[in-house]
Image (cartoon, rainbow over all chains, first blue to last red):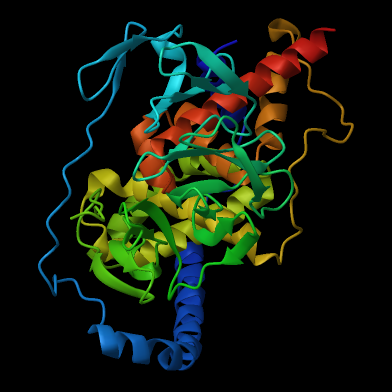
Length: 279
Length: 164
């Protein structure tokens, strides 16, 4: 039972599908209706958005494709740890042996206290290793993916019970936060960890809220986007905007200032570029 | 017919059968698949002049289909789907020659949440790379990996259950 099973069986299932061929006139007719609906929608939306957006954009100068200010000097990259042949090499050159096959590791993070957090495929788990490489704990996740904070002081994942876990440097056990609101039994996404008490969460497409130990609050943003990264101080977020009719092919990327509630940079002309919140 | 429309018609005739199959795997329903495809192709037609790289038209349509499929679901005018580990009793299309694996795969795909199903379809049917799948869906490569891994684990579990 392997990936090839999916490839073979989905192919076979798809080959059984046959529909009445669509002709050009049918497609064009649907296109005309969509265009009409978009124009009506745009007219309604302009009225609603103007009041909410004009004031903050007037203060900030508004979003623009061109950079209004020089980017701040980037912080030095903290460097990355590398796992190879069961040996983890840290940025400072020190190494530690981990009893795990590279092929089973989907993601890896190193906390500032030296512990290693790994999302494993086999077993399907989040595993925490102590700084000397010993297995410290294993947790069942909803999805075996982790999100590290920008300063590497926290790692977060969605537990099997759909509640969010945050393991912070210097604490033995992960804190248990609430679940990310999603329909059915689906698990939401942890898009970024601003700090151990503030996580940006969403539905895998859009970042919809801020999860804290007190619960979740809706994210008040001027337009829908998904947070890709945050600066170490949390003051600037790199985002991917939800594709619109005008930029459906690649979408747009940008930077968002959460304190001001404004988009400070936006680019729609190239893909697959993104923005780094540290410049 | 203008050159633009002739160009679009040629693409329509050449690719719609394949795209319908992708739409079917995304929706799990023939009628929804036909509706999804027609809407997606209509949106492609509206954007045809902006799709300057003809080699990437399929990728463009796939992205429209996935987004449209998700947004149709979110709009809620259709019956809202809730993912579940248990399917209603149906007459199983048990394939004697493959000991039901094909049926098990389809059952697993149908129980996946909509976004996870899109990951599996793009990765294993369209055979996109993990990076291409992540880009098409606007999610991280890690999420693609974990959702594929989870789907595979579900398949193994289901086959084990059916063998008992």
